[in-house]
Length: 127
Image 1 (cartoon, helix red, strand yellow):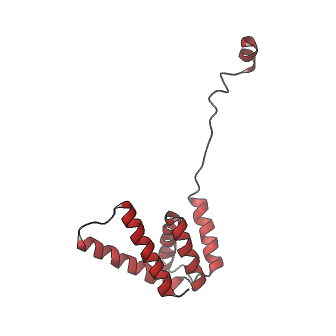
Image 2 (cartoon, rainbow, N blue to C red):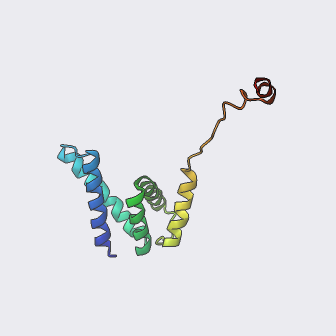
């Protein structure tokens, strides 16, 4: 896919999400600022990602927008601090996705509150 097609898909999805969540603010200056920010983000991402990596990130944005945003922020931060040697390949993006997934992984704990109530002596006395 060409960069223009990816950008068109991204803008279309953004418009759909804004319409769905009612994020359309009436202030034109705020909309203009958001548009400029989106253009800057896309420019930076176009400079640091190769074509396959951009396609993968766009697909991720359609499925998991929060995770895609976290990866974009991570890439932009790395680019601003000069931590990227060249363009990030698709394999490099996969490694970054794994890092971000590990950092944002939700820890689930299950607490069994009935274990104390059903201790063996009490259980056998009730039986």
